[in-house]
Length: 447
Image 1: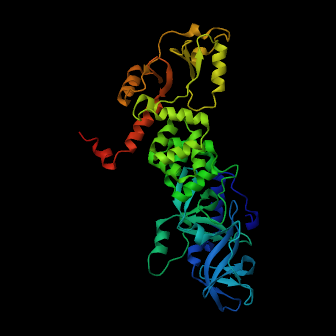
Image 2: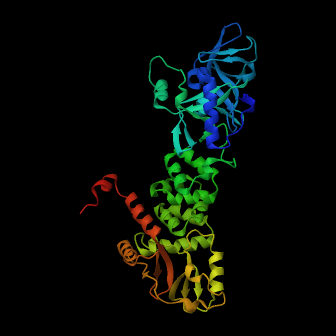
């Protein structure tokens, strides 16, 4: 087995699980509970009592962090003992190499984490083979597979929590069967070190938007803020689009105005407008002032419509081409808009006055000569339309009756102003349900 200094960082979930199982089998009962060390005696070389252990300090690093030192309480003082001055770490005590050494006051150094103060009872994200889940550290475990003591596991069981929380004789014996591999978890809200999301192979970065949304909803406020700050804007925006309306509101109100503006500008326009509606008026204006002018114009237009109307649920992102354009022009317009997630796979054809002629799908453009006029593709079946003031019930009925993939929203002059996709309707219905009281969800709306 590799020595402590040679333990490699986690390369995959399966490899990490296999390596830790091997470590546990070889170490057996030599795992040491961090919570069990708290308050235990620290003794000099001759066995004399020096003080009581208060905390264990590790370096902020990937894999299995090495123990840097220990915090020892000596009367009213909190003194620092370097790991090199320790002869042995046992479940019942800490033994020092010498009875005479220099005790230094504890100073928090960059890149160091105090396990009791910073990690125990804090939220962690477990990245295992079955997915991702938020857990809480009830205890942590140290092991010395070589000459260096390292943090190797985290206990998330209720039994370990109650062992610490309830009065009586504490049972501090480790329970290896209930320990998660430390290399497979992601800590948040840690004062002593940065979040380790900058690793290229970080499992959190591989989560789908819906999984990331579930994770953000499960995290506490400070942990959620830290995760959002570590994510790139597009990934965070995609996750927000999957979250429940109350959680999106909490995230935006908790974030700095500039960060909230970045996230909203990267979201689909209809999703961003829904989120802005939930903000108090003054906060909404602060966020809008921090956004790019083009995005603000689009969002202010959407905000003029009532929420549960066609205008309130539509997305204004469309690819418009004139009837005089060629198929090549239409394809080029689609390609230029390919980066926008709210774009439908097709072009809306309008006449010289901007009135709707047809909604031509990308499939109708396939195999057509680039120089052919797009007007020659105009014909039945004709696009389904609704006015912006149409209610949500009418929108649902129209989409159901026509079984189409989208509805075009047109103004009084029959000019297209937006599009409603099936997922827009689902989002609108979900958001309305989110705002109902819990008992209404069970007994239904009042008559």
